[in-house]
Structure formats: C-alpha cells, structure tokens
Amino acid sequence: MVAIAIREEKTVTKDIAIAFGASLILALASPFAIPLPFTPVPLVLQCQLVFFLGAFLGSKRAAIALLFFLIEGAMGYPVFAMGGSGIARLIGPSGGYLIGYLAAAYVVGFLEERSSKKGAISLFNHMAIGNLIVYLCGASYLATFVGIEKAILLGVAPFILGDLLKLLCFTRLALFFRKENSRYVL
Image 1 (cartoon, rainbow, N blue to C red):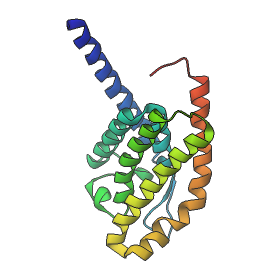
Image 2 (image 1 turned 90 degrees about the horizontal axis):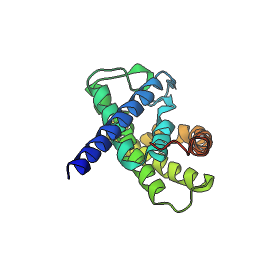
Image 3 (image 1 turned 45 degrees about the vertical axis):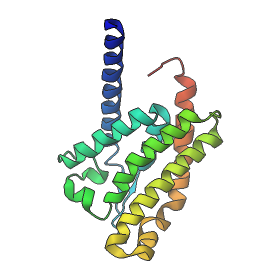
Image 4 (image 1 turned 120 degrees about the vertical axis):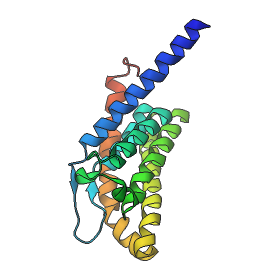
C-alpha cells in the first residue's frame, strides 16, 4: 500500500511538473503576436500551441498547463499575447479567447486520447475542433463588448485562413514529435 501511494505521488508530481513546463513554453510564445489595428484580438501562435499541447500531453496535463498559464497571467506575469498580463486582460475583450484555450486544450487532449486513429487527418480534425471552441468562447465574450455581428467580423473572420495554415503546421509538428519521440514516454 505504501508503494502504491508513493507511485501515485510521483505521478501527480510528474504531471504537475510537466504541466508547469508546458505553461512556460506557452508563455515563451507570447511575443509571437501581431496586433491588428481593426480588432482587439491579435494574431498569435499561442492558440495553435494550445492544441498541440492538448494533443501531445493529453487532456489532464494540458488542462493543468492552461490553468497554470491563466493563473500566471492573472498574477501579472507577461504570458499573454504580446507580453500582456493581469486580470484586466482576462476580463477584457480578448479574455474569452484565453478562457477558450483551457476548454480547447482539454477537448483536443480528450479526443486524441480516445481516438483509435492517430493519423494526420484525425489530429487535424481534433485541433480544428479546438479552434472552433476558441472561436466560440472568444467571439461569444467579445460580443458582450461589440455585439455578435461585429464579434464575428472582428474576432473570427480575419483569422480563419491563417488559423487553418497554422493548424496544418502544428499538426505536422505534433506528428513529428509523436514519431520521433515515441520512445520517450511522458
């Protein structure tokens, strides 16, 4: 019984350490953002990195990583796009996208864990579902500031093509890591 408790403690500690490391990787992507003059939502790499983490880490670890990320940002660490931080960023016009990251990371991880197919199409579809979740959360919250029509015009439409291209890149990246690092089990 003691051995089981120690093993479980090591697993929890390992999960937390991996999730914290993943939140730092996500934070390192914060400078890779381009503000757009016509919308409060910038172009970012973090969004697709969230889906990558979900696919690579699984639902539990990815969700914990995103919780750490959101807490770090709320505490004032510059982890959000363009080095943003603070509670005001979480409740501001783009806050819904940040909260959507948490749901999307969990869902992508969950879908990947339960998928019998581990190919590119399946992974791309799971990440695309994650992207839809972020759009839904982000645009819904943005709509409280600008109305639903403007939220779609400002917070979804300008990003669709770029997000599809980034999804293709991150799908390939995730497949590369799976293939090249399959002997390393996190």
